[in-house]
Every structure is written in C-alpha cells, then in structure tokens.
Amino acid sequence: MHRMVLETSGTQAAPRASFVVNSLWVGAMVPKRWARRAVTRNLIKRQVYSVARQHEALLPAAAYLVRLRSTFDRLDFRSARSDALQTAVRGEIEQLFNQALRPLKAVA
Picture (spheres, rainbow, N blue to C red):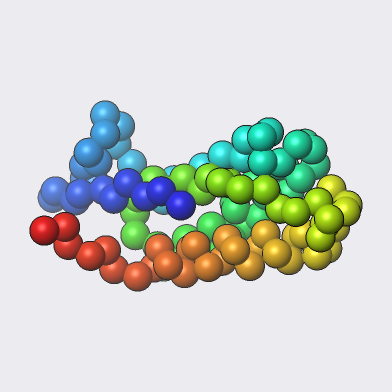
C-alpha cells in the first residue's frame, strides 16, 4: 500500500501533489501480470474498496493506492473467484489498512 499524506493548513487540506483532497481517496492497481483473469482482478479491486469503506472513518485524509505485487498461487486457488481466494485477499487487505491506521514515523 502506498499513502500520500495530506498536510493541513487552516481549513483546507494541502497535499504535496498538485491536487486538493479533503477526504480519503483509494485506488487499486491489479496488473494482468499477477492476476491473469479479469474475474480475479475485479474481485481484488472490490475487496480493496470494501475494506476501505469499513476503515474510512478511522483513516487520516490521504490518497491511498493498493498495488498487487505478486500472484496468488493457482494451485491453491483453482477457481478465478473462489471463497478461499476472496477470504485470502480480504485478509491481506485488512492487514494493510490496519497498518495504515498506525501513526507515521517521523523521517530523520
């Protein structure tokens, strides 16, 4: 997960980028290289957005990008949209969002 923290100045949130965001932005990037089937890519994206909605009230205003960096083994998950795959994906995404709830460490 990548996070771009927004700096607040006064009443407006001033990001380090060239756009203004006053709330939570979430994006999901699932390359074909790691999830060949469109059904699987869509399942992963839906899980990202669903977990983000659950954590929305607790997360600081920022832009978040969840990026799939490796494949789920097709020997373990034979179906492109199995309950086991959905549970595994959701578990990993919940871990990411739980880590995002922790305060950022100051960079020295």
